Image (cartoon, rainbow, N blue to C red):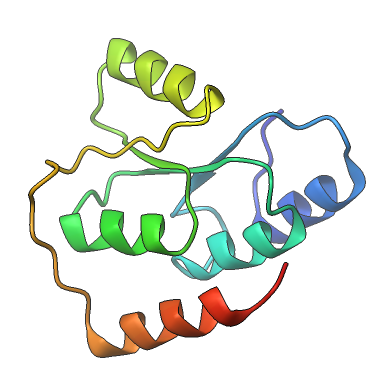
Length: 122
């Protein structure tokens, strides 16, 4: 199912019991960047949420993963890469296009937000 804005996505996730995976576009109407991920994660912490974005800067990817995304798929990914990513995520893995040893520094505000989010219970 395709949903065009964050509020509708929240309503659907809140009312549905049969969701296997959420693909969240960072440019979705009303999402406000990664805050949409935070709010959807709070609604259903066990449903894997994957960020799909054309903004595939390493700092964005790392922040999404630190905030609880189950993966990050670039809009420039090939169909095979997308299939592999979705398959891995549905198998319980975390998918990231980042190289394992790639160093990415988050700004202090994002680090503090992540620290606060980790203290919250679902």
